[in-house]
Amino acid sequence: MNGLSGAAIVGMTGFIVLRGLMTGTDVYGTFLRGAKKGMQSALELLPALCAMLLMLALINSSGLSLLLSRAISPLTQLMNLPQEVSPLLLLRPLTGSGSIAALEQVFAQCGADSRAGRIASVLMGSSETIFYTMTVYLGAAGIRRLPGVMAVSLAAYLVGAAVCGLLM
Amino acid sequence: MLASVILSLINGRGGETAAALLSSGESAVELLLTLLATMTLWSGLMEILDASGDVARLGSLFRRAARPLFPGLKDERCWSAMSLNLSANLLGLGNAATPAGIEAAKLLAAQGQTGLQALAMLLALDNASIQLLPTTIITLRQAAGALNPADVWGMTLITSGASSVAAALLMMLINRGGRRV
Image 1 (tube, chains in turn blue, purple):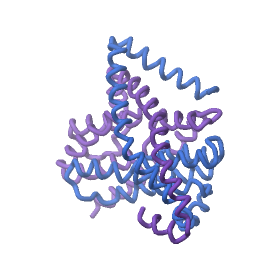
Image 2 (cartoon, one colour; image 1 turned 90 degrees about the vertical axis):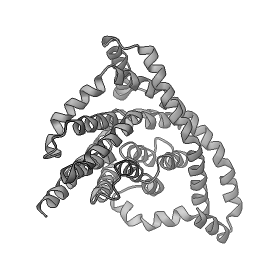
Image 3 (cartoon, one colour; image 1 turned 30 degrees about the vertical axis):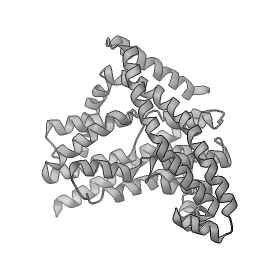
């Protein structure tokens, strides 16, 4: 890793530790506590990840993914997105583990440094599991539906995808 | 899933499908190892940032900036839950963002029409997800052999910035329309 972004990651890490020391936080103990939480949430992903990779394997080898990509190809062509990104584009708003699996698939097919691989990375990093977030928050608030949010979120997601495709 | 099983049998691709099916469990474990490493490391670091009070400070900064997006919202507890939720999301602190978001959703739902419109805006912003440091993506790219795994960072910020602006503008339009009715 090199260049500006490499330096920023190192700088960010240094900044976090420095801020911890400045405010008198128990840096080591706090790190361990957070790391444990992160580890647990990662481990909890395994069953879903397994199911999603299985599903993607089925969808891809059966030819269903080709059918779906063709179905949305007018949209992806308009946004100048490579065809390999289509499964990710479809899965991203629905499932977090599914989209990680789809991202991995793009890396495996085209390489992480290919145009498709880079676009897939940006698309993944700049969006959220919309349907999941909505279910969790609205469920907690006891609201059945909140008009507009879903449409706005999906539209904003497509704006992001178009920005990716047209600028990269 | 069923559709693909049927399709693969129709297309006579049962053999290939079986092979893909069996190797998918193995790739799940490999993928998990990468995720485990990055999530453990960054959750640890971010916990320090949270404990140092910087997440709360970022939240109060956000509050001043975001007033125009949430017109008419006065309730203090709503604002603090909302700003914690958004600033935790900004830092990629999923563990802290979700409880704060749920808290905010409950409080806002009790505030009538103004609260519901604010909740709609909050969700639209959350869904557009600006994240300062996309650590998971960078690590996944590194594991996949990218030469410079972090080189998508700038573009990620531009893209999520664009979708956040789009989300805020669209939601503002809808909320304005809702108030007139």
